[in-house]
Image (cartoon, rainbow, N blue to C red; front, side, top):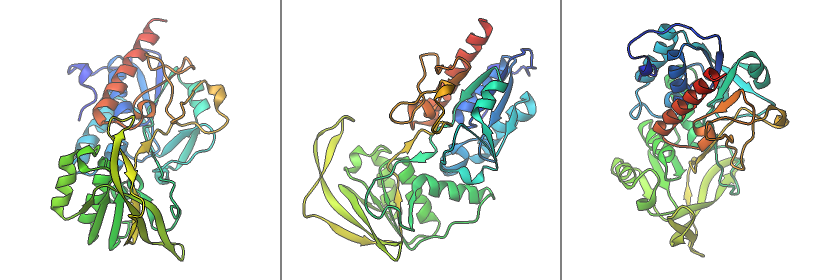
Length: 349
């Protein structure tokens, strides 16, 4: 997985005086770095994790993306093209906690970074999970798919101890995070895995084939079912209450709206309840950072113009922190387009 394919086999050197900082070593940030070093810029990447790749390295299972391939591209940038990586360093303005922060050792001010570099590109992705907002959600034994997958990958890479395998787990969701979490639980020794989805598998974001594949593995896929509360005893999960659903008229997504069927509630005993109902963008800004000229919309995504610029002329943003959760290919495209815009702006001055 090479990010320097724009160099066309020629090893470039730093020929431009402008220094560029990239926050986030995921697919958008790495792609942008690859393009910019090929144009002769000095590029430095800051990431809260101890290894490049972002979610590719620390959340997506190895059977989807080979970690060796990700490492190869990162090492190419570092060793052959002079990109400097600042690992385990969270760049932030104000205070905020995101999933995956456990491996961050240092913190750097976003304002200071903007001051030190000619351009800053924010590509911090989606390190936050949506919550369902149901009773019992704060009990011990409730987790998110993203957090669980992160802990497993961090263990496999030697950074964290192995999480215990529960006897029974209920995962709620129909996207790839839900699919991956359910499959990882099964492969790591959980004897009963339920995957609960509020529509039929035909409408699952991960695709009908993925849902059927899980069923073939022995995972109990429950269509038209949705959790209503987590059952708690002594502060720990002991089960989950669910309700049957029916499909109504199409909603804003174009899919049939799932509607609860009154009186159809039932319960399942479980040791673990895992929410996989979507991720949210995680920009490196908390409260009190309006003076930096970086704005977010109501979903927490950074606002940019068609050239990936924020209101701050030195700050650009790209990838899932702008679009919300998407596929790796889209993040790569965003990173490349933002890098080209940065190059255009810097060479037009």
